[in-house]
Image (cartoon, rainbow over all chains, first blue to last red; front, side):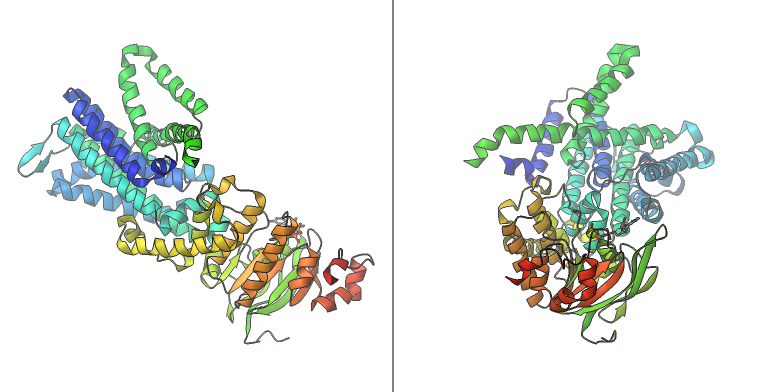
Length: 319
Length: 267
Ligand SMILES: Nc1ncnc2c1ncn2[C@@H]1O[C@H](COP(=O)(O)OP(=O)(O)OP(=O)(O)O)[C@@H](O)[C@H]1O
Ligand SMILES: [Mg+2]
């Protein structure tokens, strides 16, 4: 049982199973839209988890990269006729390179300073998107040309649900690959002791830059899918609130748990939708719920459940 | 003693650093070569750990030079020194607590692994091969340090004695030329101390230059080729265990009683 819970294939099977099962059960376009939003958010959360949960580096500006990915699929096809698929990759590449360039100086900072610096980065992106109204449409945003595959325009939420699901699974496979390598061990090591990591020959600045860059690529791809799903985009995508929401997904689902990122995304996307029936109490209830989870499931939802399950099953395992 | 000695792997000359006007290490000079066990002893606060931090690049020396295999490495960061074959353990454990015992040791092999983040991300066969090699070597080290039973346990759940040995295993995983051990036997029971003693001698025999900081005089006098006595950041004396034991300044420094537990070293 312990084997199964810690196994990467089990993790992958669980996520795939959940996506397929939900995909078969969802009754209407509305639910597919919510489902697609969950999966798209989970992609960014998985990436942020690599940075925050595994490497222990805070970013309060990751929505900035979501914004870059979102505007890449809006701006490039609209103004320069770049195909949408290529735009997704160009946005991701730009995000990755930008993160690598600014990551070096920023990631030298620790704790609050790192938080504030990344916060500044997110705000900067949102500001540029708002102010360059001539090409971005300013605060009102702009329409996003639909993705065309094999001559058909993809606009059905159901199609986006499956595209996002496939992308999430690939994202998780890449994250698992990384974690199960010397780079992955290095980034987890520096979380616990930078001095021991450096003594072991790990170039901490380099590894932090790499994981920051990878997480930026994840955020950017998530942003592109979000823009394509919605068909319209505003600078709010890159807002500080969205950055905080991403961090909350990671922490709530469980730092250092890839499945946790999907669970965290599901909670933060579905719950507000479910709570709308309570009208003015919606935010109060959502806040209380998050506080309750953090009090009772300190390590996040998935790690706490896993621990409980392992403890219950432990005697059996020893036989 | 010549600092240009071609066989000296590590040579430290006239090194010093101060914190808030206090000279934590002041004008320390020594050198050591492959296969030697060089010990540094001295009372609490003498500057032994600070000296290790200077040598391993955690602190940058305000004066003096550190040479590794003939190269001036005084200004290099720790990771660059690790790449040149320097490994160390920490007096106040620096363990990767969220990783398993095995993974902790695997991290130690980092200097021998390829820096190809992209092939890691894509999980290319070369990565799997590299993982296997690193894992096998780490398993062998866990076995050697009597930690095979806790291979997949989270390091956070290990006992103090086990963590001390885990640090040694992690340092050895880099297959170092020079190994700095800061009180490897502190807090260990006599059986564990004897095991660590044995490993230190074995590692030195394999050609590694060992620099050892240790309070256990029996261990130090038993295994060392040379001993340096540090007090208040300065060198009191450097010589063979016998020379150090009989030196008048040492006897004086220890208030005429000789080195504590000195008796034990002769049995
Ligand atoms: N980063 C630092 N900042 C200020 N003072 C320091 C620092 N590092 C070491 N010191 C001081 O340097 C002196 C030497 O300390 P060090 O830890 O090197 O002693 P030690 O010989 O290793 O002692 P012990 O046997 O207790 O381990 C002490 O007075 C200590 O307070
Ligand atoms: Mg010390």
